[in-house]
Amino acid sequence: MNEIQMLAIGLVLGAWIVAVWHASLNLRDARRSLDESRQARRRAAGGHFLNSLELYQVQQRYGLVP
Image (cartoon, rainbow, N blue to C red; front, side, top):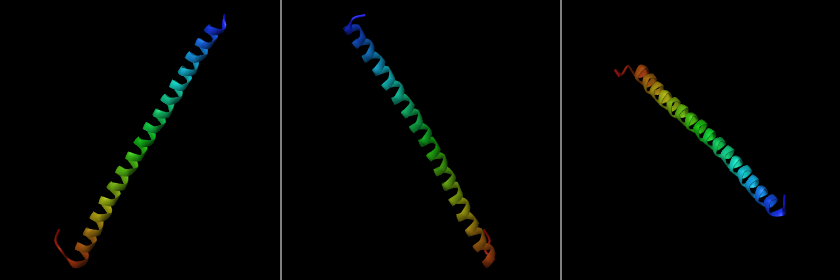
């Protein structure tokens, strides 16, 4: 093989490695954002539950009808 062919093979191989690396980074970022959205959904549900519980406790304490 001559030097031009080796250069072409090196460039193609380097581009392929970078493409695979970027794909793996994108998958990791997608997984992180999915986890963050799940956590935000759980926090929102927990906050809603706690607010409802506090309202229920106040109603029970003062004998209010819901």
